[in-house]
Image (cartoon, rainbow, N blue to C red; front, side, top):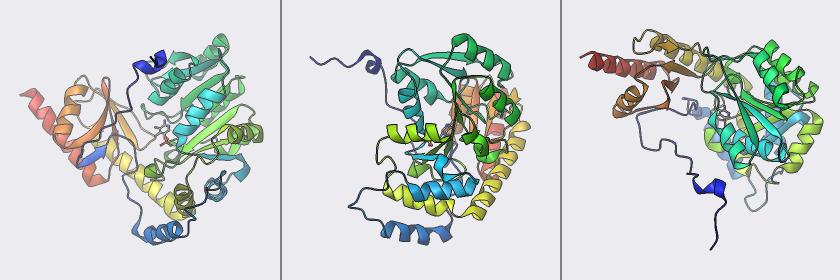
Length: 349
Ligand SMILES: *Cc1c(COP(=O)(O)O)cnc(C)c1O
Protein backbone atom coordinates (compact mmCIF):
# COMPACT_ATOMS: atom_id res chain seq x y z
CA UNK A 1 0.00 0.00 0.00
CA UNK A 2 1.20 3.47 -0.85
CA UNK A 3 2.15 5.49 2.20
CA UNK A 4 2.06 9.28 2.01
CA UNK A 5 5.25 11.00 3.15
CA UNK A 6 5.09 11.63 6.87
CA UNK A 7 5.13 15.42 6.45
CA UNK A 8 1.94 15.33 4.36
CA UNK A 9 -0.10 13.05 6.60
CA UNK A 10 -1.32 15.62 9.08
CA UNK A 11 -1.41 18.52 6.64
CA UNK A 12 -4.82 20.07 5.94
CA UNK A 13 -5.78 22.25 2.96
CA UNK A 14 -5.57 26.02 3.44
CA UNK A 15 -8.85 27.06 4.99
CA UNK A 16 -9.66 30.75 4.73
CA UNK A 17 -13.07 32.13 5.66
CA UNK A 18 -15.29 31.28 2.70
CA UNK A 19 -18.82 32.06 3.91
CA UNK A 20 -20.54 35.12 2.61
CA UNK A 21 -20.14 38.16 4.84
CA UNK A 22 -21.34 41.71 4.35
CA UNK A 23 -17.84 42.98 5.16
CA UNK A 24 -14.65 41.08 4.35
CA UNK A 25 -11.78 42.51 6.39
CA UNK A 26 -9.85 39.31 7.02
CA UNK A 27 -7.35 38.98 4.13
CA UNK A 28 -5.83 42.47 3.72
CA UNK A 29 -7.05 42.81 0.16
CA UNK A 30 -7.76 46.24 -1.28
CA UNK A 31 -11.31 47.31 -0.42
CA UNK A 32 -11.57 49.04 -3.81
CA UNK A 33 -12.96 47.27 -6.87
CA UNK A 34 -11.28 48.03 -10.20
CA UNK A 35 -12.45 51.37 -11.57
CA UNK A 36 -15.23 51.27 -14.13
CA UNK A 37 -13.09 53.17 -16.66
CA UNK A 38 -10.52 50.33 -16.72
CA UNK A 39 -13.05 47.62 -17.53
CA UNK A 40 -13.23 48.42 -21.23
CA UNK A 41 -9.46 48.35 -21.61
CA UNK A 42 -9.20 45.07 -19.69
CA UNK A 43 -11.94 43.53 -21.82
CA UNK A 44 -10.00 44.55 -24.91
CA UNK A 45 -6.75 43.05 -23.59
CA UNK A 46 -8.48 39.74 -22.92
CA UNK A 47 -10.06 39.69 -26.38
CA UNK A 48 -6.66 40.10 -28.04
CA UNK A 49 -5.12 37.13 -26.24
CA UNK A 50 -3.99 34.08 -28.24
CA UNK A 51 -5.67 31.52 -26.00
CA UNK A 52 -4.32 28.54 -27.93
CA UNK A 53 -0.69 29.64 -27.40
CA UNK A 54 1.50 29.47 -24.32
CA UNK A 55 2.06 32.87 -22.73
CA UNK A 56 5.38 34.75 -22.59
CA UNK A 57 7.48 32.69 -20.14
CA UNK A 58 9.09 35.84 -18.71
CA UNK A 59 5.96 38.04 -18.70
CA UNK A 60 8.05 40.76 -20.33
CA UNK A 61 5.35 43.40 -20.80
CA UNK A 62 4.04 42.88 -17.30
CA UNK A 63 7.55 43.14 -15.82
CA UNK A 64 8.15 46.30 -17.86
CA UNK A 65 4.96 47.95 -16.59
CA UNK A 66 5.82 46.91 -13.01
CA UNK A 67 9.43 48.17 -13.31
CA UNK A 68 8.25 51.44 -14.85
CA UNK A 69 5.71 52.01 -12.07
CA UNK A 70 8.43 51.67 -9.42
CA UNK A 71 11.26 53.25 -11.40
CA UNK A 72 13.57 50.23 -11.38
CA UNK A 73 15.39 48.31 -14.16
CA UNK A 74 13.21 45.69 -15.83
CA UNK A 75 16.14 43.25 -15.80
CA UNK A 76 15.89 42.98 -12.02
CA UNK A 77 12.28 41.73 -12.04
CA UNK A 78 10.89 38.17 -12.02
CA UNK A 79 7.11 37.72 -12.24
CA UNK A 80 5.28 34.86 -10.58
CA UNK A 81 1.91 33.38 -9.81
CA UNK A 82 1.53 35.39 -6.60
CA UNK A 83 4.45 36.08 -4.29
CA UNK A 84 3.46 32.79 -2.72
CA UNK A 85 5.01 31.03 -5.70
CA UNK A 86 8.23 32.95 -5.11
CA UNK A 87 8.23 32.03 -1.43
CA UNK A 88 7.87 28.38 -2.41
CA UNK A 89 10.62 28.69 -5.01
CA UNK A 90 13.03 30.43 -2.65
CA UNK A 91 12.49 28.12 0.30
CA UNK A 92 12.76 25.01 -1.89
CA UNK A 93 15.51 25.85 -4.40
CA UNK A 94 17.68 28.42 -2.68
CA UNK A 95 18.58 26.24 0.28
CA UNK A 96 20.55 23.00 0.18
CA UNK A 97 19.63 20.08 2.39
CA UNK A 98 20.74 20.98 5.90
CA UNK A 99 20.91 24.74 5.27
CA UNK A 100 19.28 26.94 7.85
CA UNK A 101 16.43 29.38 7.35
CA UNK A 102 15.92 32.11 9.94
CA UNK A 103 12.43 33.55 10.32
CA UNK A 104 10.89 35.72 13.02
CA UNK A 105 7.73 35.46 15.08
CA UNK A 106 5.06 36.79 14.94
CA UNK A 107 5.30 36.74 11.16
CA UNK A 108 3.40 35.76 8.01
CA UNK A 109 2.39 32.12 8.52
CA UNK A 110 3.29 30.97 5.00
CA UNK A 111 7.03 31.24 5.68
CA UNK A 112 7.00 28.44 8.20
CA UNK A 113 4.47 26.48 6.18
CA UNK A 114 6.81 26.28 3.17
CA UNK A 115 9.87 25.76 5.33
CA UNK A 116 8.17 22.72 6.84
CA UNK A 117 7.02 21.39 3.50
CA UNK A 118 10.48 21.61 1.96
CA UNK A 119 12.18 20.24 5.06
CA UNK A 120 14.27 23.34 5.61
CA UNK A 121 16.05 23.45 8.92
CA UNK A 122 14.33 26.49 10.32
CA UNK A 123 15.08 28.61 13.34
CA UNK A 124 12.77 31.27 14.67
CA UNK A 125 13.77 34.49 16.41
CA UNK A 126 11.09 35.75 18.78
CA UNK A 127 10.35 39.47 18.55
CA UNK A 128 10.42 41.50 21.76
CA UNK A 129 7.18 42.32 23.60
CA UNK A 130 6.84 45.53 21.58
CA UNK A 131 6.58 43.24 18.51
CA UNK A 132 9.06 45.43 16.64
CA UNK A 133 12.15 43.95 14.99
CA UNK A 134 15.46 44.40 16.82
CA UNK A 135 18.03 44.51 13.98
CA UNK A 136 20.95 43.69 16.29
CA UNK A 137 19.20 40.61 17.62
CA UNK A 138 18.47 39.46 14.06
CA UNK A 139 22.07 40.02 12.94
CA UNK A 140 23.40 38.19 16.00
CA UNK A 141 21.04 35.25 15.52
CA UNK A 142 21.91 35.02 11.82
CA UNK A 143 25.57 34.71 12.74
CA UNK A 144 25.09 32.31 15.64
CA UNK A 145 22.98 29.97 13.55
CA UNK A 146 25.03 30.45 10.36
CA UNK A 147 21.72 30.89 8.58
CA UNK A 148 21.79 30.70 4.77
CA UNK A 149 18.50 32.55 4.41
CA UNK A 150 16.69 35.21 6.41
CA UNK A 151 13.04 35.81 5.60
CA UNK A 152 10.78 38.51 7.02
CA UNK A 153 8.09 40.98 6.00
CA UNK A 154 8.51 44.75 6.17
CA UNK A 155 6.05 46.27 6.96
CA UNK A 156 5.11 43.19 8.93
CA UNK A 157 2.00 41.11 8.55
CA UNK A 158 0.46 40.62 11.13
CA UNK A 159 1.88 43.33 13.43
CA UNK A 160 1.41 46.23 10.93
CA UNK A 161 4.72 47.72 12.15
CA UNK A 162 7.56 48.85 9.91
CA UNK A 163 11.34 48.80 10.23
CA UNK A 164 13.11 51.88 8.87
CA UNK A 165 15.22 51.54 5.75
CA UNK A 166 18.48 52.23 7.57
CA UNK A 167 17.97 49.29 9.94
CA UNK A 168 17.05 46.93 7.11
CA UNK A 169 20.16 47.98 5.19
CA UNK A 170 22.27 47.20 8.23
CA UNK A 171 20.80 43.70 8.52
CA UNK A 172 21.49 42.97 4.83
CA UNK A 173 25.03 44.32 5.02
CA UNK A 174 25.94 42.47 8.18
CA UNK A 175 24.95 38.99 7.10
CA UNK A 176 26.08 36.61 4.37
CA UNK A 177 22.66 34.98 4.32
CA UNK A 178 20.31 35.59 1.41
CA UNK A 179 17.85 38.15 2.79
CA UNK A 180 14.33 37.67 1.43
CA UNK A 181 12.55 40.92 2.23
CA UNK A 182 8.81 40.66 1.74
CA UNK A 183 7.55 44.17 0.97
CA UNK A 184 3.94 43.10 0.33
CA UNK A 185 2.68 46.21 2.19
CA UNK A 186 5.40 48.70 1.24
CA UNK A 187 3.07 50.54 -1.15
CA UNK A 188 1.52 51.95 2.04
CA UNK A 189 4.83 53.16 3.50
CA UNK A 190 7.88 55.04 2.20
CA UNK A 191 10.79 52.89 3.37
CA UNK A 192 11.26 50.58 0.39
CA UNK A 193 14.64 49.23 -0.66
CA UNK A 194 13.36 48.43 -4.15
CA UNK A 195 15.59 50.98 -5.87
CA UNK A 196 18.68 49.54 -4.19
CA UNK A 197 17.79 45.88 -4.66
CA UNK A 198 20.26 45.16 -7.45
CA UNK A 199 23.16 46.74 -5.61
CA UNK A 200 23.19 44.00 -2.95
CA UNK A 201 24.56 40.57 -3.68
CA UNK A 202 22.34 38.89 -1.06
CA UNK A 203 18.90 40.48 -1.37
CA UNK A 204 15.58 39.46 -2.91
CA UNK A 205 12.64 41.83 -2.45
CA UNK A 206 9.14 40.44 -2.91
CA UNK A 207 6.22 42.59 -4.01
CA UNK A 208 2.64 41.66 -4.81
CA UNK A 209 -0.32 42.93 -6.82
CA UNK A 210 -2.67 41.45 -4.20
CA UNK A 211 -2.77 44.38 -1.76
CA UNK A 212 -2.50 48.06 -2.80
CA UNK A 213 -2.78 47.26 -6.50
CA UNK A 214 -6.07 45.48 -5.92
CA UNK A 215 -5.53 42.40 -8.10
CA UNK A 216 -5.59 39.57 -5.56
CA UNK A 217 -7.75 37.53 -7.89
CA UNK A 218 -5.12 37.49 -10.67
CA UNK A 219 -2.33 36.06 -8.49
CA UNK A 220 0.63 38.26 -9.38
CA UNK A 221 3.85 38.50 -7.39
CA UNK A 222 7.29 39.88 -8.20
CA UNK A 223 10.86 39.33 -7.08
CA UNK A 224 13.39 42.15 -7.47
CA UNK A 225 17.08 41.28 -7.19
CA UNK A 226 20.50 41.59 -8.83
CA UNK A 227 21.22 39.98 -12.19
CA UNK A 228 22.76 36.79 -10.82
CA UNK A 229 19.86 36.01 -8.48
CA UNK A 230 17.28 37.06 -11.08
CA UNK A 231 18.81 34.64 -13.54
CA UNK A 232 18.71 31.84 -10.98
CA UNK A 233 15.05 32.59 -10.17
CA UNK A 234 14.10 32.64 -13.83
CA UNK A 235 15.94 29.38 -14.44
CA UNK A 236 14.36 27.58 -11.50
CA UNK A 237 10.74 28.71 -11.91
CA UNK A 238 8.28 26.70 -13.96
CA UNK A 239 8.28 27.99 -17.56
CA UNK A 240 4.77 29.45 -17.95
CA UNK A 241 4.14 30.34 -14.35
CA UNK A 242 2.11 33.49 -15.02
CA UNK A 243 -0.94 32.86 -17.17
CA UNK A 244 -1.68 35.03 -20.21
CA UNK A 245 -4.77 36.69 -18.77
CA UNK A 246 -2.98 37.80 -15.62
CA UNK A 247 -0.04 39.10 -17.67
CA UNK A 248 -2.30 41.16 -19.94
CA UNK A 249 -4.53 42.59 -17.22
CA UNK A 250 -1.65 43.17 -14.80
CA UNK A 251 0.35 45.10 -17.41
CA UNK A 252 -2.68 47.28 -18.24
CA UNK A 253 -3.24 48.10 -14.55
CA UNK A 254 0.41 48.92 -13.69
CA UNK A 255 0.46 51.37 -16.62
CA UNK A 256 -2.15 53.52 -14.87
CA UNK A 257 0.51 55.05 -12.68
CA UNK A 258 -1.30 58.18 -11.52
CA UNK A 259 -4.59 56.55 -10.64
CA UNK A 260 -2.81 53.62 -9.00
CA UNK A 261 -0.92 56.05 -6.75
CA UNK A 262 -4.11 57.98 -5.95
CA UNK A 263 -5.89 54.77 -5.02
CA UNK A 264 -3.00 53.77 -2.75
CA UNK A 265 -3.17 57.20 -1.06
CA UNK A 266 -6.88 56.70 -0.52
CA UNK A 267 -6.29 53.25 1.02
CA UNK A 268 -3.80 54.84 3.42
CA UNK A 269 -6.49 57.35 4.47
CA UNK A 270 -8.91 54.42 4.96
CA UNK A 271 -6.40 52.82 7.33
CA UNK A 272 -5.80 56.07 9.23
CA UNK A 273 -9.56 56.32 9.60
CA UNK A 274 -9.87 52.75 10.91
CA UNK A 275 -6.90 53.22 13.24
CA UNK A 276 -8.48 56.34 14.72
CA UNK A 277 -11.85 54.64 15.18
CA UNK A 278 -10.29 51.61 16.92
CA UNK A 279 -7.98 53.71 19.10
CA UNK A 280 -10.95 54.99 21.06
CA UNK A 281 -12.40 51.56 21.90
CA UNK A 282 -11.90 50.26 25.44
CA UNK A 283 -12.05 46.55 24.55
CA UNK A 284 -8.56 46.81 23.06
CA UNK A 285 -5.61 46.76 25.43
CA UNK A 286 -3.33 47.91 22.61
CA UNK A 287 -3.86 49.17 19.07
CA UNK A 288 -0.56 49.08 17.14
CA UNK A 289 0.44 52.09 14.99
CA UNK A 290 0.02 50.70 11.48
CA UNK A 291 1.99 51.57 8.33
CA UNK A 292 -0.08 49.10 6.26
CA UNK A 293 -3.70 48.78 5.11
CA UNK A 294 -4.76 46.89 8.23
CA UNK A 295 -4.78 47.41 11.98
CA UNK A 296 -3.52 44.95 14.60
CA UNK A 297 -5.19 45.28 17.98
CA UNK A 298 -4.84 43.19 21.14
CA UNK A 299 -7.66 42.31 23.46
CA UNK A 300 -8.12 39.58 26.09
CA UNK A 301 -11.56 39.04 24.49
CA UNK A 302 -10.20 38.47 20.96
CA UNK A 303 -11.98 35.16 20.43
CA UNK A 304 -15.38 36.38 21.63
CA UNK A 305 -15.08 39.65 19.72
CA UNK A 306 -14.11 37.78 16.55
CA UNK A 307 -17.25 35.65 16.86
CA UNK A 308 -19.45 38.66 17.72
CA UNK A 309 -18.27 40.36 14.53
CA UNK A 310 -18.92 37.21 12.45
CA UNK A 311 -22.42 37.13 13.94
CA UNK A 312 -22.86 40.66 12.59
CA UNK A 313 -21.57 39.53 9.18
CA UNK A 314 -18.14 41.17 9.58
CA UNK A 315 -15.13 38.90 8.94
CA UNK A 316 -11.80 39.87 10.52
CA UNK A 317 -8.73 37.73 11.27
CA UNK A 318 -8.30 36.21 14.71
CA UNK A 319 -4.64 35.84 15.74
CA UNK A 320 -4.30 34.56 19.29
CA UNK A 321 -5.00 37.46 21.61
CA UNK A 322 -5.37 39.95 18.78
CA UNK A 323 -7.51 40.85 15.80
CA UNK A 324 -6.11 41.88 12.45
CA UNK A 325 -8.64 44.08 10.69
CA UNK A 326 -8.23 45.17 7.07
CA UNK A 327 -9.10 48.82 6.48
CA UNK A 328 -12.33 49.47 4.61
CA UNK A 329 -13.88 52.68 3.34
CA UNK A 330 -14.83 55.13 6.11
CA UNK A 331 -18.54 54.26 6.30
CA UNK A 332 -17.67 50.56 6.60
CA UNK A 333 -15.01 51.33 9.22
CA UNK A 334 -17.75 53.10 11.15
CA UNK A 335 -19.89 49.94 10.98
CA UNK A 336 -16.99 47.87 12.33
CA UNK A 337 -16.38 50.30 15.19
CA UNK A 338 -20.12 50.43 15.97
CA UNK A 339 -20.31 46.61 16.06
CA UNK A 340 -17.33 46.53 18.46
CA UNK A 341 -19.00 49.15 20.67
CA UNK A 342 -22.14 47.01 20.78
CA UNK A 343 -19.99 44.08 21.89
CA UNK A 344 -18.39 46.22 24.60
CA UNK A 345 -21.82 47.15 25.94
CA UNK A 346 -22.98 43.51 26.00
CA UNK A 347 -19.80 42.44 27.78
CA UNK A 348 -20.27 44.91 30.64
CA UNK A 349 -23.88 43.81 31.26
C1 LIG B 1 -0.69 39.12 1.30
C2 LIG B 1 0.74 38.84 1.50
C3 LIG B 1 1.52 38.39 0.44
C4 LIG B 1 0.92 38.28 -0.94
O1 LIG B 1 0.88 37.02 -1.41
P1 LIG B 1 0.38 36.77 -2.91
O2 LIG B 1 0.69 35.35 -3.10
O3 LIG B 1 1.17 37.67 -3.81
O4 LIG B 1 -1.08 37.10 -2.95
C5 LIG B 1 2.85 38.15 0.65
N1 LIG B 1 3.43 38.36 1.85
C6 LIG B 1 2.71 38.83 2.88
C7 LIG B 1 3.39 39.09 4.17
C8 LIG B 1 1.35 39.06 2.74
O5 LIG B 1 0.63 39.50 3.79
